[in-house]
Length: 423
Image (cartoon, rainbow, N blue to C red; front, side, top):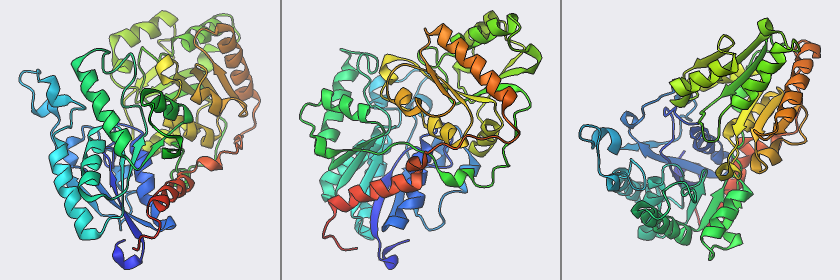
C-alpha cells in the first residue's frame, strides 16, 4: 500500500499495536490498519520498538496486513529504564511513562510525512504521548489531525490527583490537544460530553463517536458452539478493587449453592487475564470469604484467540464496570461478548455499558448493590444453561459495531478533512 495504489495516506500513531498484548485497546488500531484501505486510505503505523512491550501476543502480530508499513522507534519506560532503585522523577513520567518516545516519534513521523506524502494523522490514547507526537507533527506540517480518545486522559477527581502539579500540567496538555486537533473521536457519547464539560470551547461539530466494536475476522473458524459442560461464568480482562470487583456475584452465587438452587459440582467461575489484583492476596481472600475458593480459577493473560475460544464455551460471560468514573466507558470485551451470543451478566452502573447491553436477549444488567437483581439473574442464567439446546447461540443484531464498518466511519472523518486533496 503506497502511492502506487492511488489511495490517500494516513499516519496512525499508537503505543498499543501488535505484538503488544497487554490491553484490548491494541485491537482498535490494528483493525483500523486492516480495514481503512477498503475506504481509500492507506495506513502507515508509527509505534514503539517491540522491546517496550512487557506483554506480547504473537497471534495478533500475524494479523498485521502485509502491505502496511510499521515504523518502530526508540522510547524508554521511565519506571523500568530511568529508575534508580525503583525510584524516578515523576516529571519523567508525565504525561505517561513513555514520554521519552516524543522526540523519536516526531523525528520519524516528519520523515514519513515528507517521504510518503501523508494527508492525515491519527493518534490514539492511551498513552498520551501519542497525542503529543501527533500534535507536534500537525503544528510542523499542517497535515489534518484526528485525536482519538479511546479512554479518558484525565479522570476528574481521580487521576491525576486534583490540585497536584501533575494535574496542572496534564490539564494544559489535554487542552492543547483538544484545541489543535482537527477532529476528536471518542468511543462513547458520554466521553465526548466529559471532554466538552472540561473544555467549554470544544464544539460539537469537532467530535465524532466511533465505538470500540469487534473484529468479525477474529470469530472466523471458531468451533461450532456447544452447550457448556458446566455452569461456568467467565470474566476476561483486567479487574480492580475500585470498579471491577466480582465479590457481589460470588457471594450471591455461594448463597444459591448453599440453598441447593445451583449444584456446586457443576459450577465454575473463571477469571482470565485479570492483572495484578486478580493474583493478589486481597483478591484471594475475597474469593475465600465467599466460600467459592474451590470453584474459582484465576489465570494469567492468554492469546486473544484462545480467550475467545474460552468465552465461546462459557455458560455466561461477566462484565464488571461499576464506578462513577467509568459510567461513560464501555469495555471492549462487551462488544465481543455480544458477538459471541452467550448470555451476559453485567455488574455496572447506569451509563454507556448499561445502555449498550440493556434490552439485548439474555443480558442481565445490575448495580453491585442490587443483590436481589444479581440473585435473580444468576437463577435465570442457570435455568437458561440447563434448558438451552446443544449449540444454542443468541443471534444479536450487533453488526453496526463491526470494526470493518467503524473503519469506514473513521475514513469518513479523514475525507471531511481532505476534501479536494489529491493522493
